[in-house]
Length: 231
Figure (cartoon, rainbow, N blue to C red):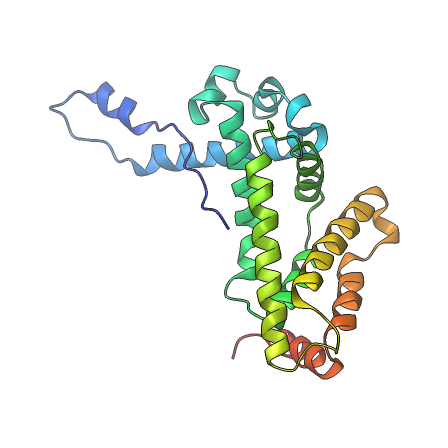
């Protein structure tokens, strides 16, 4: 996944200026912690606003009001609405990325099931609303979603190719085609879950789909390994 953008803003320089050059230098730890915590609040509020209203309708004013600060104060941390959107998308990736760390082959598929099991409504709404908006080439998240889908197809193709090499795929499954279909299934399940959560079990449905691609023995072994956890 792309690395997170570092937001602007820090209270430390102002603190140094206030004390003068000759006195003891204050610790940066306290102000830095406060700044980082404030940025986290802003990102969480922006995630909720963009997820509910989209990028075009969601406003800096609404986000600022949600965290009890002025628009100018918010823009001290994130220099523009575009920069805030980019940071929110990276923030979303960071919240879910740990589930996929170092997973390869059939383990990557098992990680995808686990990610669906713990999906938060706010992050799912953000993804669905913004990915639809971002089909327009001029949208600030267009490149992000183009790259994200390319990355997802690539890692899924790699997973299926590793499975094929290990004899874990059912006969007739083509890795690249299975990767594209998996992306479509994941997006479709997520949208249906947002519309009617009670009628869709995303993790169970995705598991059933992967079972149609993997051999029974391979999937059972992967599931048992995941339940057992690290040695």
